Length: 67
Image 1 (tube, rainbow, N blue to C red):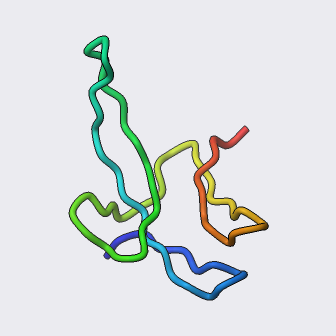
Image 2: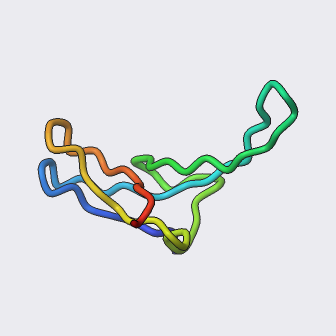
């Protein structure tokens, strides 16, 4: 089951996804994002070294690197 988080502001559930993206220089990076539905690329756990936060204005979840 995909990792999910419920918005405190709206009550909507968001699912964590990841994808590999190639940059212009040929360098590849992993992108993490939340979506309203679990689709291709949904992951089961929070990546190591990250924590979930919520934008206070919009209620959308976001990942932050843990300090």
